[in-house]
Amino acid sequence: MTIEFLAPAYLWVKSFHLMAVMAWMAGLFYLPRLYVYHTQIAPGGDESARFMKMERLLLRAIMNPAMIATWLLGLILVLTPGIVSWTSGWWHLKLLSVLAMTGFHGVLSKARREFAADERVHTERYWRIMNEVPTLLMIIIVIMVIVKPF
Image (cartoon, rainbow, N blue to C red; front, side, top):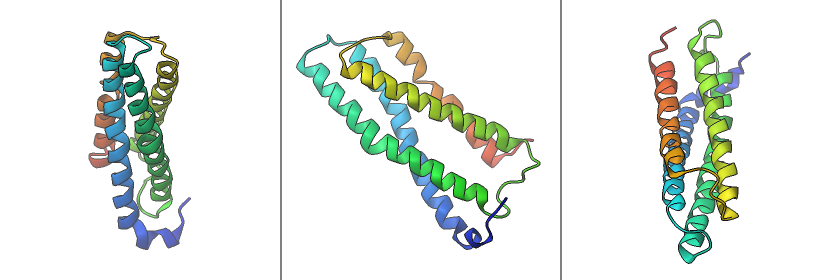
């Protein structure tokens, strides 16, 4: 299903979609790194409170709006005629990867609430490993969109 009147706005929508993706990805790269550093400090102090504030602002002021904009603009792109060949397989893997990225965002959001309660549920090593998840998903998504291998 496509909506014809979206075609003239394609390049504008694509431009704003890419800006939203970049903002979202910046947060997805940075927030787990903040968690790495946050696990290194003792709960309850001023430094922990400073990390809590940075994590909350990053998530609420940048990441959440960027994720919502990414999804809305992406849906508009999908509904634009000629953008997605529904018989091609690449977009299925891209969509699955974007869903995984959204799930990862949810994991980070849950962890922010845990850190806000001064809980250290996961280790520094866990957050170092989790810090690589958005990179792997980004590689898959970009290859699917640019190369369209299948």
